[in-house]
Image 1: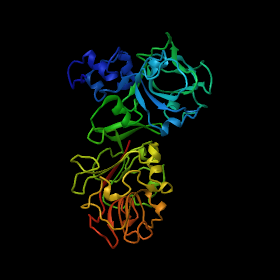
Image 2: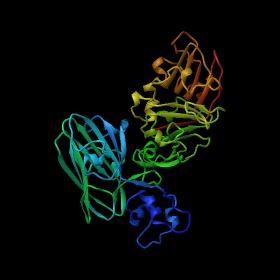
Image 3: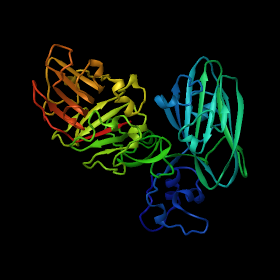
Image 4: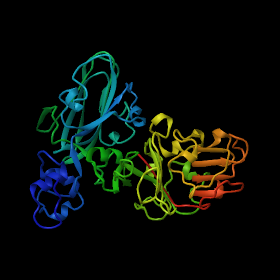
Length: 459
């Protein structure tokens, strides 16, 4: 893929790359991105930092099961297939051939998300034709809070193929978030979508009008780091603009494949200290952030809004200052913890939910901390015989000392945790540490026995 040059002449193919990667492109499409107007002189500087702003097409995500007109249903689930499409002539073209046009005796649901490009100001009409339910949102409602009440096209319920439409005035040239939901609940099925607009006859092939943002620019934000990587296979770590509760939010992301395939978003980070102990309201108040403009991995305390609202199913912790690298993930940057599908058999939830005391539970993998690949006796202290790897504190064990994610040990009779003396992890009662390793007494082995830096990620 071509790179926009830092100086000199801009080739047409370079401009094309910035907008969509392939296919036709018009300079007017760049206006909302780089501030170009009709009589402006196009310069290299206008395109600085806008490389790979989007891809052609909306991102579709296909799911097993029927969403049953619950517009929040998709948020807690992970797709079985995904891809990009601009062609909504049939269900097959709308899903990259995953589903044929018609069929029976199956249940599935599909969500599409991206941006609609309105070239001129005027009234645009959008249509869905479906069996069963479908919805379409455009504008701010497509980013968050999308409900049956605020959709532009409501084609809800169980029904044979039927068409519904809605019209809206858009100001052009400009990009507008767009989202569609569709579900099939046994028997026959089909889906198409189309639109018409000022000087545009009704079309099902939306090439040149539908795009997916890659998080490189604040007005073309992405759903998550994981989905950016799905679309681009990028290995470039850094700051990306992510849709966080309807707001374009700069978020530090680890994209490199070495991090268990990449696609991680930084939720919080802690220096050695007591900013994020177990009792801190940072773990319970989803309206708080701390130092949220620090988009680096530098040593500091920070809590980001992605921790409050980002829906994740995998969690990773990196420990930069323990003097050892490796752990759950084989790499040479930091010690690592990794638990995939860490909550409710792989359901997506916020860190605030997954680490909540009300959801105290054993880790779904390696409930014995000493068998966990993230365990090392040079870092983490131990007791015997009672030991457990927990999320949410350990109250399900009647633990008297808690940690949001980590290890609890007790030297009393097996499986008794009412007098825990050794812990390690993130969000600790012991020492009121943000993270670390702590011995109160009666240890079997000695680890670092101190507070530690930590970075917490989700995807």
